[in-house]
Every structure is written in C-alpha cells, then in structure tokens.
Image (cartoon, rainbow, N blue to C red; front, top):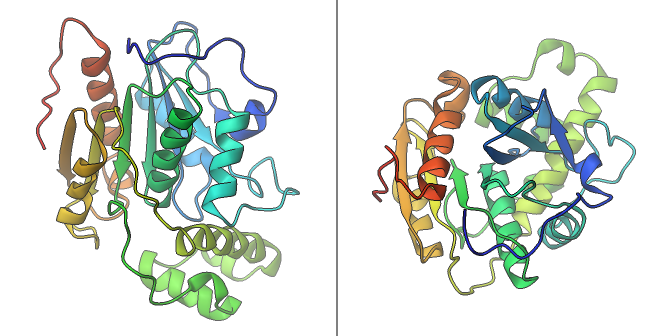
Length: 271
C-alpha cells in the first residue's frame, strides 16, 4: 500500500449518488473507480465487476444521468472535479485503489487526482487513462456542444456509429441521450489544462490499435507522472474494451496489484 494516504474512514454523504456498484465482493483486494466516456452511462463500467471477482468496482455517475436524472448536468471541468473531490471518498478499507478513465473520463480522472493532491487527500495507487490524448489538448475546431440537435446527432453517429433505432425514433429517449453528449462535450471543449507538477502516481495509458487518436499522443501521458509509466496498444478501436471484454480490466488489475505489492508481480512497467 502506498504511503501517500492521508484520509480514510466512512464515505462522505454524497458518495452514494456518485457511485454505481454491482455485487461488490465482501473481501475486496482493491478498489477500482471508472470514469465514463462522453455520453457514457455508469452501468457499462459497473459490469467490469464480472471480470474482477476480487475487486470492488465503482462506476462514477455524473449528474443528470442514471439515478440522477433531475440534477443539472455538469458542463465545466472545474465544477465537476470540485464536486467529485469534495463529495466522494476514493479508497476505503485501506485497500489499494485505482482510477480508470476512458476518453473524456481519462481527463476527469486525471484532474480528480490533481485535486486530491492539492487537498492533501489520499491519491490512488494507479491512474489508468484510456483512448485519450495527453493534455494539453489541441485547440477545438468545432464546438459540438453548440450544434443544433440534428447536427449533433449526425456528428455523434459519424464518429462513433449509429444510435439504436429505438432511441433515434423516440424523441423522449433521444432527448436525454443528446443532453448527456452535449453536457460532456461542453466539459471537454471548454477544458483548459493548467500546467503543474507531475503526479507522484503511476500511470498506465491504453489505446486501441485502430483508434483515431495518434498513439504518440496517448503515450505523452508519460510527462504527467514522476512515477512508473506503462503504455499498451490493445486490439480494437476507440472502444477497445468492448471488442475484447475483460482484457482491459484484467490489465488494470495486474498493474495495480504489482504496484501495491511488496513482492512484485508479472506486470512490466515499460513505456
């Protein structure tokens, strides 16, 4: 276990609405917190528990989705990170823990770690960033969060494939989906990276071999840690973990176990 811990104890009052879990193991060896991609729902990441029987998997649930439909969605990175760092206790029971973020979620997880550091709170034993270029990001050419609904839908489907027909055909289903995307794109497109001291947390960076992000931009996460770093290119595209279920979760677990074990492990920290 890392010696960086400062906090602990019972979860804060707001943690419950922020976290979604499925059948947490009674004697978890580690905690994993998953931050969804733009437009994503926590349930997809909560299902990672099926591949990690000894890990307590918690999927982060942003305002305005899941069981929080009546809350206004977050549209700015600063406000979202402030709420997470102040209302959620990351790491419980003294076990090692990791943050995993995919695409937009990687940026949110990274900024949460920086916020925990600035507050003197316990930081994770591992940060895993997936399918996301390292900050600072390239200037935004098109502000998708400002597009009319029809154009926003067309751009979403051009980039990531068609939405289910039952969603596209039902305005009552389509509206909240577009709302999630619009809010998340606003977080991304207004995000301004503020340079700072590299983290003292190991980083594992993942990307898909067929992802549109240039691998070297994902490898650039190396600059954001003074600790260990590893970079892996996995089979598949932007959502590589959907194409080979279980591979990314098990890789994160292997890195976390190796990092937090005094006896070492099989994971090789090579950048």
